[in-house]
Length: 486
Image (cartoon, rainbow, N blue to C red; front, side, top):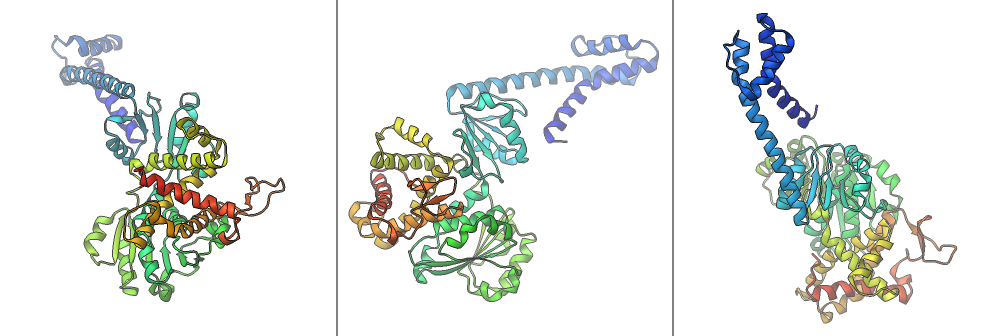
């Protein structure tokens, strides 16, 4: 039985206890019929009891009944106050209702502060937006299906571990995964750029442990760790990844090799010793595991994603070990809503529509052009914007400056354009697209998942190359104008 249901049951039992005691006390005394005993029990709640109780049961009920009445009044008042407070938050604007049955929902409400509304189980409240984050994923879908008309015009964010957002074409639906956000932020915060520069862009990354986080670290790493056209960053996966590899045949087209090992990690000590970084996810007995790993590779840079990291941080204080919260970034409101990133992606798409279409550069066109896109193309723009932070790290490394003026980035424009094309290709490959020329002469066929530009940058026409250059230019220009791209 769920915690909320247990609470309701306990409240009902406590409130009805005086009535039950009164009825039972009178029945065993033989002084009253059942109906009279029931009437006297109900009367205790509102009028008190002036007679001498016939036994201990009625005496206890006489004391408990006023307390139960007072508790009921207080509970009713608190319920009414909660409803009024929620309605006021809705009327103020910007409110977000959170539905969930775990500690994550409480954490989300704490982050929302005065904009947050706790969604009562099974009932829709007024709000501007909704976050559905029940631990049982099916409950999120069931709730959405229960109120299709009411939620049709609302922005709804659904926690899901099984659906990919780029596959869902609903304007108002946004799916989020803690693991995907954790991986996105990790590769930007702990970029491989330093190691790549030091080792001539020849690196080896080992991932031990699978699950959604391990898979996300791989796919996000392939889209973020792009530093040079001729780089070779090997990704060695130590977990049963046959299904994942089969569902992502595009991994073979990445340029950076992705190798799935059939043996256990400890059976490949040489591979671990050569690793520039070892990432660890989803491990049981983390203390024992980390101790064994350090015995094998004591000097390796190890990043372990743990849901209970406090003990690891106390026990392992070596500078080459980073203990990371496996869901810390995913639980942050900014990474659930992703408002800034989506706003930037919309602007990027508008820039393209203005240059190569007939759109006008205004807010109305920005939203209209965005609505024309399918989910896959929307998230291609999101991926492009997300990579810009890596590009900025590279520019700072090259120039030693934070400047984004044209004279600063212009010497590296062609490099950045080529890397942007590589990123764009990888996004498509990860979603099972291939090179192909559609029969209708268009650039792409989304049904067959073929595109005529999924070729090396050097083989592109000058017109196609200019599109990649323009993407890079506009991002630096926005930043120079003071628009946030972080």
